[in-house]
Image (cartoon, rainbow, N blue to C red; front, side, top):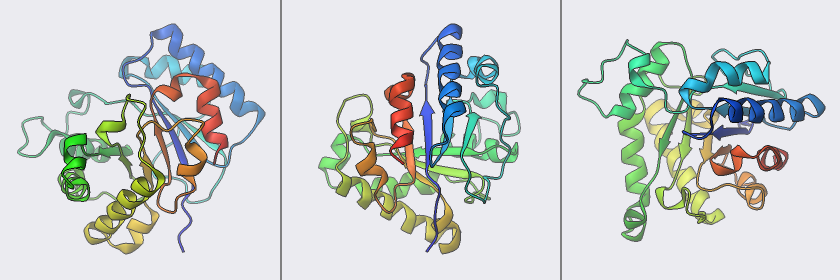
Length: 238
């Protein structure tokens, strides 16, 4: 049985000015200086804040591939929604979905990509959840993707910023279906190693239950990642 180390990633999206980002980064760094959670940690600030946030965390920056040996760590910086123009090796006019192009560009540049997929409420109500996520995964995962250079995040659109969250049974069902589809695409071994994060309003009060699910390998945290105490509480839930 493959043991996948949990990954708690803070997706700041477009939140925060320079001072806010530095303060948040320093708060996380102070927590890490005093304890080591049983997971990897990561912050994804807006593209313009990468440098000041990295300085605020003041920890060695990670390089691909993902470490094979479990160890406490904070992977300080990945960019939230990196502009495609910042990685010129893939033109935005490619006849592929833009998410595929961005992921391919990241891999070709030696970076690690988080590929986000998820259904709308209308699609869930229509019973299309599994079909939609399989289709999005096939349309977004570039050639050469593997467990060392790619992370998948399941983000049900209806649960982002709404306060709603998938039940544990719903989350596990979709994560298991994603892993089964990955096995078809990249082989069972790599699928068993690839981390699949849950990204639909994970918070301190529901993190432990979600993180205990067999196919949930961490969280892609939105609003709760903007508060040091909440982000740290989620990491401790591992």
